[in-house]
Image (cartoon, rainbow, N blue to C red; front, top):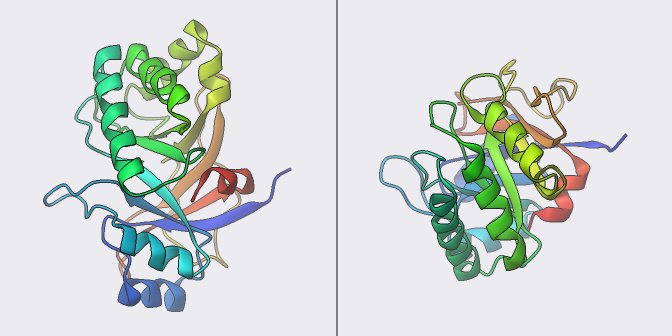
Length: 216
């Protein structure tokens, strides 16, 4: 069994203040999930300076692409990939890094979009990932259908599960690794088990140590 590592994600820029808050109250994350782009009232986009700061603390960057309103259609996925890769290259994220598509549980999702994301990312040298809710919403059905249509989807993608949600904890008190998974073949290597911490503006995660090989 691969070892489990603890990490966080945030919509806000990681600066000294946020880092100190997390370090003092929660622990030292092995990875930090951050958004590739600026969306007003939703997320601060990553910058090269922020990446340098995060990595200087011995923390790996987990990149998330969230300019997605619904995950429907192969062509739409191709457009999303082009945008995600543009931002990844702009930030000098190396090839081999996983780019997580942020698929919320209230989105419409179909198998064509999931195939499009994975199949279009593959030749770019970046790895495909999905932040998703395997319990609520359309993701599980669409993902498993995509795997039936192309078995490579299951091999090539890394899944980040948002269920179940026992709640935010420090690193020391993190639960046993037990994310909900789709009912088909899937590499569920990250689990967001706690959201919206009161003391620092973060979510808390556990991950299979293998995912660190695909983070920057």
